[in-house]
Image 1 (cartoon, rainbow, N blue to C red):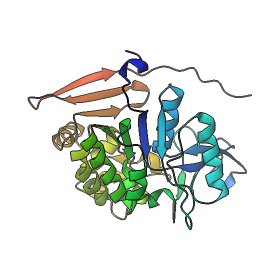
Image 2 (cartoon, one colour):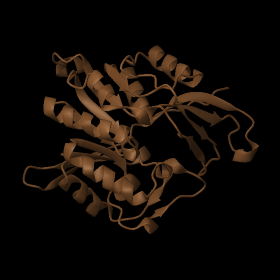
Image 3 (spheres, rainbow, N blue to C red):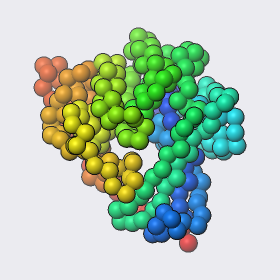
Image 4 (tube, rainbow, N blue to C red):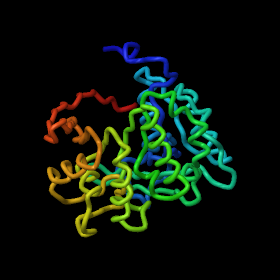
Length: 287
C-alpha cells in the first residue's frame, strides 16, 4: 500500500509535538570531553527528528515546537524549512531560549551528552498552541515523554492527545526517557502511565519500557553522562504486558541493529509479537 492510498481528506500525515534543539557534536572523535576543540552543528530533539525522517520518506509532516527569539531558533527553523517540514504552527516564545545539546564521541561505548534546557522554549507550549495546530487535520499525532516533564507543556500535550482521540487522530508516544529532565525518576513513570489511556502506539527501547514501570530507583544506572543511553533493569516481559494493559494497542520495542519487536494486544487480551529485522545500511566515512 502506498502513501497515497492511505490518505483521505486530511491535509497532513503526521503532527509531531515536543523537543527541538541545536545539537553540537564533537569533531574530535575519540577525544575526552575536556579535550574537545570544535563542534559540528546539527538539529535534534525526538519529535523534530521524527518529523524530518517522515518528510524524507514522503510524508506531509508538521512540527509543533517552541523556538526562542534567538539565532539558535533561526538555525533550527531554517534547517526544518529546507527539509520541507511544516513549521508555521511552531511559535516563538519571547523570554525563552531554543535549547541545545552537546555531545562527545568516544567510541566504542562513551558518548557523554549534556542538555541545556533551562528556560527552554519548547517546554512553554500551551493549550492555545495546540488549538492553533492541525490536530484534527492530521492522521497521526506523535509526542515525546519529555513533554510531560513540566507545565505548561505537560497539560498542553495531554490536551492534544485528548483532542486527537476525540477526532479520530491516531496517537503515538515516543517514551524518550531523559533522566536529567525529571526531579524524581519515579515521576517519569507516573507521568507516562497517566497518558497511556490516550495512546494507541508506544515506541521505546527495553530500558525505556522498564523505566515506565519503574518501582525502585536502584534499577537505573547511568555511566559517563550518557543521558540518552540510561540502563534500567527489570522484567521486560512483565513491563510490556503492564504497559499494554493501560490502553495502547501496540508497543514497538526498538532493538538497535537487530530491528524491533512489535507487541500487539489482541481483542481477547492476549499478546502477539512480530519480529521486524534490522535494515542494514552501508555507512561511508567522509574524507
